[in-house]
Amino acid sequence: MNRVHALLVMPWVASAKYARLLTVLFVGSALVVACAMAITGNARAHREIIIVVLGFAVWALWGSYLAANLQLARNARELCLPRMQRDADLSLLLFAVPSLAVPTALCWTLGASPLLAAAIFTVAAALGLAYMLLPLWVGFPLIAASIVGIMSHDLSGQVSTWWGLAALLAAFDIFRWWQLRTAATVRREGMGAAAVFFCYHQDAMRNGGWYGFRFLQERVTIPLHAELKDVGPRCVVTSIRFALGGFGMPKPFASRLKDIGRLAAYIAVFMLFPLLAPLLGSPVATGEWVVYWLSPLLTFGCLLTCCTAVSAFAGRTRSLWRKSDAELPLLALLPGLGDAASGKRFTITALLAPPLVFLACTCAVLCLATLALHTTPWAYIALMLCCSGALVLTVAATLASLCGRPMHTVEYVLLYIVQLVLSALVLMKAMPTDQYHGAHPELIGMVPAWLLVLWGLYLIVLAVLAVHGARELRNHPHAFLANIP
Image (cartoon, rainbow, N blue to C red; front, side):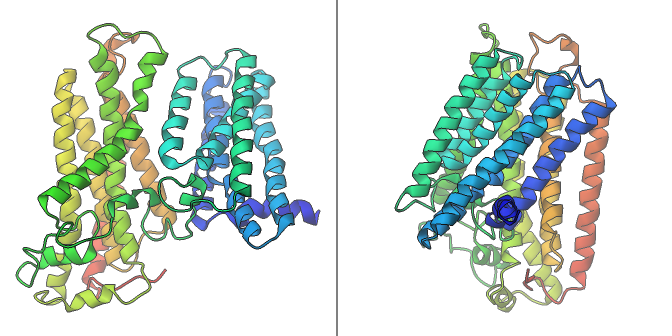
């Protein structure tokens, strides 16, 4: 039993602290949704949706938790511990049984074919593991394209097709796992590294949100990447922006264009796979490409830009104000900062003006592109809601960090997920994604009342958090006190 217990807890030990948190949130949320649908609704009628939700849970389990065993195996190799390397492999095989058998049994009770359900969950597990074993720039578009291809077809297809796909993915995972585990050296940094190594940072969530957005924070080389023209006692806000660095740092026009191009290229990689949907589904008639292509591009573009804004600005503030060294409090000695109240105002302006400008420009560009859809005003309202929610979330998280009581990671991640889910729902309801083939085209572009109520509650919660942070900041000695984690 001791050996079995050691194998079961091995992924928990190997995972970073916040990887465990994300796994619990994703898997737990998917299981709650599946159980709620099975209990409250007609379970047999919603069988395919429940399979998709459970498949997401399996994908999240293998893509964010079990893959950490590879990191443990690599460490054991460097320490010359062969038994631990074998245990990392055995632990993965041990988890394969319950992670596939439990959801398959649940679907069997709902009347689904157990062989079909097992094949689908095997594909989901193999996709999650493949995502972590490939470099991010290859893994995410490839896995996203695979998911789009799978979801564009009926889940009740040929069982042999699903098992064939599962066998191919499993063979690739075994080969890639063995290659990374036995290699003399592996890349651990940069976009060419496998995602399991790239994302394995103990402080990834603690010190700055999503690690993947740190590509915006390149090494500063004066005068190419920094603008020193207005830095000084007469422009305190600019001086603070320069001292804090990041995406909001004052830069020359050419360097700013380079940052925008890098960000646009990064977002474009994740926006391209919606274009596969019309190719994999029914053919698109001439003149309908705007509805089928531009609408999903705007939806994904808005989602990714808002997520990037929250991570690049609010996440960076959480990172800087949680550092354990003495760099941050030294900014209280900046010349021209004035008294404590003036310093707080300057700091808030320096931290919140860049995301305000960024999201305002993003919303304006998306609204201009939406003109080509000839849709209802609800599309513009949906875009404004998404950008406003991202801005208010950034304000709430920033003020919480400045007042000395930063958001707990659970709270921050939950608000982040709620922002993403509500944005996706309102954009899918408002954008004309199926104007020509929908059963009820008159409903396209209409946002239901319940979704507006949820958005109102979400914005009220964020506003309360922001007001509370502003009040706490008044009692703070000054704005540059670090919050030691």
